[in-house]
Image (cartoon, rainbow, N blue to C red):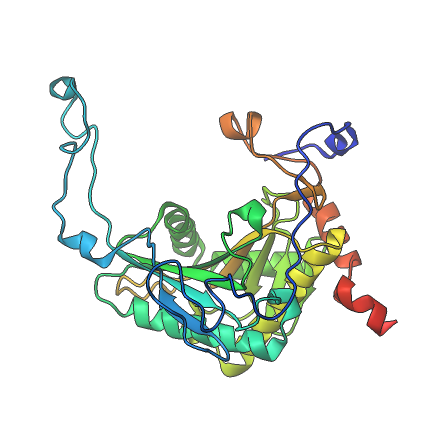
Length: 344
């Protein structure tokens, strides 16, 4: 990781993003996620009152892909196929299930604008979905993630997330699996338990915490205001959280996202996702539940960080230190900027 805080002083004549869109009104008749509305396909949403889960109408993964034959090289058009060493190229079908979780019937809320109790209901849905999908004998990984904002490719402003369950463990959690397993084998302890203890001892990168969860700008952060949310108690997945821990997770998610919005007093785009133990039938005691937050913002709500050039070809580069980022996130406070007029 290359850290170059002096680069924040350079003049900026590059791309300026449009100002983030603020939703207005609790119901949008054109939104395909609002209660009672027709979706993009032929289905219609029920008039749901809390959360709502449905199978994605345009899934990236399908469960019937497992029945398709494996096709090493055979489907890749290549007139020189006979010249390739056997096994150089390979392709196979990947089975999966894709679902959408609407956080609320209200179109005009987001995670930082929901109550802890409302977010607790969302956490309960995540727990149920992880258990249901992970129990399928062919599912090895359940990925829960939220893309917020147009800058992160969100196609709808209604508060929602996605859950993709896959037959194999994807690349990023697979690399985490290797690191967690190696650390456990070498030291007999949990990598994230040890890391969290070190961060809490020094606190320079800790942004906020409650009794059960801690949010830090990780030492290895790539994005300027990246955060890692870690359970204080060793738990391998969402399904191991006690009732109090589920509410504590809701609390820390609200606090983290409120700080993001307060950075530039605008709805902050981000991608967030949970990493937890694989569901391949093994115990995976080395795993430790955590969530990654990746916001693209850098200088303002309209000037983003771009991963290009040196980052793509050599190594990631940060424009401010993790400690500076954590300090700025601590300083913005946890009263949402839209509520400050009513609290002062």
